Image: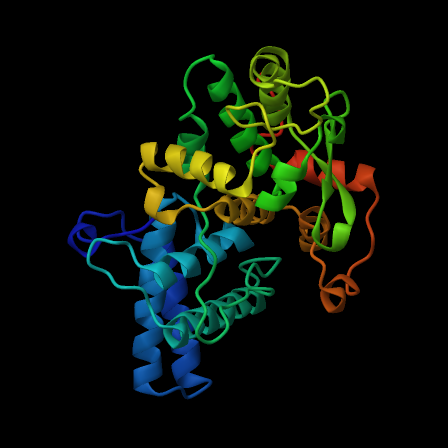
Length: 322
């Protein structure tokens, strides 16, 4: 995700005049119609200028942002940039989120936008940081790290592509059996918490990587004809959670992302990128297999075909190049 170090702010892209006009109009509304204090107005102005620089770095306009852009911004400020700007406190992140909600409600009232991207914006609970999420460019850099055509490299490439393509948990990934992946129809059967099974669509990039691994990598690594697991270690046995962590972190370090990565980072990135691409929240929740009944009861069960339509429309690596 984009971050702006203090020493680079002067040279960073600046918000457009159009954005500054929208911000001034919003602040005037807060001052003259809602009577907010000078301190609050100053804080909101600072928050919106920071958000404007964030959008400028992404070449995005304030009136066309997606929910994922807002989540990325809050995650960015919550985590700091490692170059002198410390992570913001939960209270500060909550204030910035409140500012964005108010700003976009104002834009909708003024008919500058049709849909409010901040309507479902969530903030971290007190004492907890937002989950780490990679930008799509960072994910591309990570997925490009397994280089070569030896068996272990083919396995690593298939593993990373499949985890990002499906949002699987680490435990679900190492539990996959060869029969759980339907390469013809682009579907993977995941066994989640409580032994609950779900079907998740998988895009063309991951399918191609898994197919290559099964054709040229797995036969060299597997020692027993009875082995059913999809991913195996160098001894030919089932890959363990620790083994998976080592694979993910090794390639993350070579991509310069070692201090920000865990297998769950790919899962969080999967969900955020789908939402940013326009996938609706309940489809993402279905694909993630959340087990919280109090949450899942709020959503209608979706059929596999509906999930596939939502997935292929939103996921950036769902299609092979023509």
